[in-house]
Length: 456
Ligand SMILES: Nc1nc2c(c(=O)[nH]1)N(C=O)[C@@H](CNc1ccc(C(=O)N[C@@H](CCC(=O)O)C(=O)O)cc1)CN2
Ligand SMILES: Nc1nc2c(ncn2[C@@H]2O[C@H](COP(=O)(O)OP(=O)(O)OP(=O)(O)O)[C@@H](O)[C@H]2O)c(=O)[nH]1
Image 1: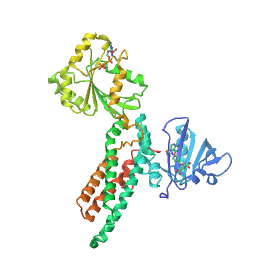
Image 2: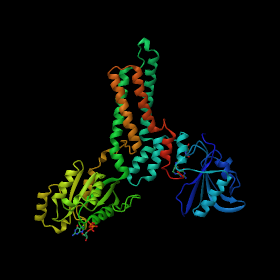
Image 3: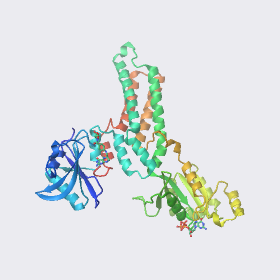
């Protein structure tokens, strides 16, 4: 085992709850808890089997602090790979703190953010991308984001990367062996097989790299900007979408007060609606800073909904949007169709051929809108077992690995000498290793795990 110290943290949220879980991990976790725990069966924990639960009392100087359940996990068969003891106590902040203070006095140290999972990684219980998936899983707030995190946590693409890396490593050694015999002009590495492997690796890498566009938006919610005059029915529309799907509305922590962002889940996909009052004014006002800010918001969106009511369609707004965002999909939507006659609707269609009519208030045309939104997402990629990456660190490493693999391929085509090829192969191996954590630096680990919650 790597560590000699014993860490402790509250694993459940701080505050009052029915039950709170305090987690201790380290070589002496069992004896430390033994020193403050009296089981009702008067048995010491040290002699008990792993994965057993024991009822008893936490005792501080013969004073009973609480009646608790203690769960025992003996290393290496635990989450961290070390001895782990969990104390489930009554969820009062007072009790939680007393138990923690008691164990700190006995010699435990407060765990830093993500330290339990860091230990699990360093003890070989999971690789780095799986550890990162744990944080994603905790943060996931839609079915799709959850699925991606879960798949990654269960080994997802890291097994695949690891396998390819090992095959590549194999070739690297053969090529490097050739260097030792450079006078004799021998080839240990079969060039045809090597070429095939490089082809296979680039295919896998390309597929993963392509999946990031989707993975990234799913993780953060697909950003949709709603542009429209006051009173066209934006709030009503958002509410209808919300009610229909019984989704959760949440203000994202950290977003500025001047834009409202609502998360709406449609068939398990999170959409993040960015309400941007503003671009309605005439050309000269458009130059104003406030409007620029709105444009800034639109910049983040994948899709723009231009919502207007009845016959108040402004072609200048639509044209401006199309000019400014030629690569974004713009959806013109006419709300309050209940107030329009058929003839009026036909007229609007002449101006805006691809308009979608709906009535937010009367809940007409909502499912068409939902289908349009979902069609943005290549949901085929979500079903089945296609791997989707959602972590920008992995994305960067995959891009770099692919670049190196392509260099190796070119080298092979050009019959480059083994020593030059060996360098590129090592680089590719390095970047693949970054994903699974076969190569890491303290900085990188610090960066990743400091974003976890305490107790995880
Ligand atoms: N109370 C509690 N709930 C929890 C966790 C935890 O640590 N404690 N977890 C943590 O975040 C997750 C579960 N993850 C876990 C993963 C592995 C093991 C474990 O003991 N693994 C052993 C033995 C498995 C067996 O044979 O039964 C092993 O890997 O060797 C425990 C929890 C979610 N729920
Ligand atoms: N007839 C009709 N009225 C609607 C419809 N949708 C919304 N309204 C009404 O239009 C008015 C404005 O709706 P809101 O949803 O508050 O509009 P908004 O765009 O969010 O307005 P701001 O918050 O000022 O930007 C309300 O009185 C709604 O009841 C519709 O489909 N038909």
